[in-house]
Length: 394
Ligand code: NAD
Ligand code: MG
Image (cartoon, rainbow, N blue to C red):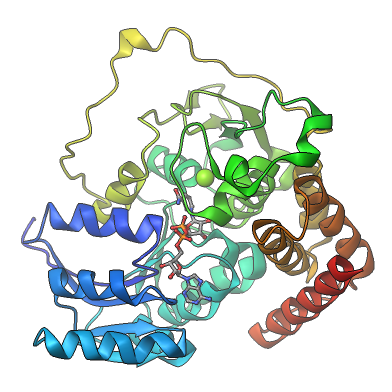
């Protein structure tokens, strides 16, 4: 069955997930064909990726970068077509010749192109959790309506997915499953005294002890907003009520989740904390692909710890549960407010502790509306961004 040749678009190919995906594809060149690559502004890296993978299309969303990429590709004699902006992204996410889309853009910017991939019945490997946080119900409906396959790449969700029978379809409640537990490493500040958190720098917040990731998700991991988003993500992917999704601290990041069956059995996937493992599992699904990453030594797993989480230390996790209960546009506001606050923190315009304060304030102020269309999602997103920016400026 290995003759299957996968034709891929990689949204966000210059990011941490995008680069890991390409590194993996490079190990199996005969099985994958890269049709399109995309980035926001890093045209130098995108040019290098084009040289290596010879895609038909390359997309940039920052206008100034387009000319640079075009010139470089021309000098190198490549006939890759360069496209620009959201239009370019949705175009390459929905190309007829593409069967699989790796959705690895960070943040709300990934919503429309990954949605478009679902509308066109593609297999979507979803790393971009913010898309599900913002538009979970619409996203799942769109996948079901168009018989698109959705496979989670986020390590916790991919681990759960691996534990479920291959007949399981994302968005449906898995049979015989009572509840889910997501593990959290605790991030870089698990043991930092709370009074010291006020003065941590973007560098400290981005230095995750176990995973190497993009800047935004690293900060989200430090505030535990990431785990809150993952609770919302699990709710939509596995149709579980929020009360059936728990979080435990697991500093070693070896067990990626627990699936609790109704008969008392617990299933789990264990591996090194390396995103190539869930990415490979998603690309190979429902089969398996051989990996150069060494498997764990079982006899070295004697010290795994699982600890209850201190909600006072991580108030954004509780906020995510509250927002999930509210439904409607509340999760859209949470995602947008957090994106703006993290951006301000990374630009040293907001302290680490104030990320949570600002997000809480924005959520208190913003209206919660029901939403049934993507336009309503985008309107709520815009409103939340504007209001959060105002809160930060004051
Ligand atoms: P990253 O910052 O390293 O890369 C983001 C990619 O998106 C880059 O290619 C960038 O060019 C592109 N991009 C950024 N803003 C854009 C915009 N406005 N328009 C178009 N493209 C844009 O991020 P990452 O760590 O690779 O994470 C990607 C997604 O995967 C995130 O949603 C993250 O939560 C999720 N995720 C990441 C990891 C990880 O280990 N890095 C693990 C689980 C889930
Ligand atoms: Mg995760």
